[in-house]
Length: 73
Picture: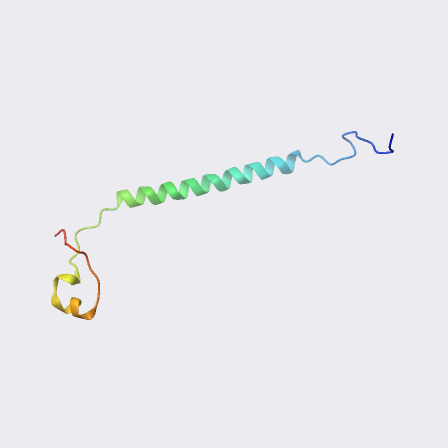
């Protein structure tokens, strides 16, 4: 027999730290999921109006800028 005591009084109680770590992890996951859900919502909810592209005119083509292959206007 060694002189070590295995009673629960000799080691510190780690339950409050463990609970705090679990709650912090859950909060981080909830914020991450909420932010991604918001980005998906905004991506589907925003429908910008038709915008005239510079590619339709010859001057933008000469300047080397890019535009839509086919305008929806």
